[in-house]
Image (cartoon, rainbow, N blue to C red):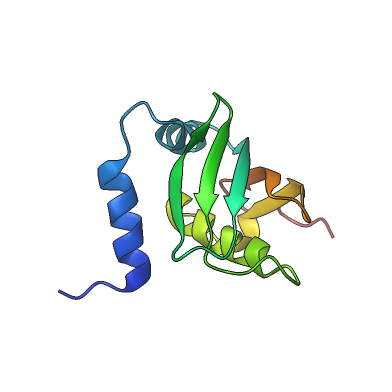
Length: 116
């Protein structure tokens, strides 16, 4: 069976994540609630997309392959987080930090329903 590059990254992250890591805790919280909000610090223009650790007790450090120009790193971050959390890209919002390495992310389990 052949796995795509994206799936290989996904599998490696879950094999190496400790049961008490912040990423694991966030994934578990999303399973039991309708949304989660958390902080990330991204390092753009990296060799590949990957979670590299935690900064303090409230921020996940993520390397992103895209450059930080014209929103490319933000778009790639959303795609990467969608894969990690198993949600559609449109369920992920950057609440703050669009032009900063430090961002606040919100992920909802299901998309909001439009009224009318």
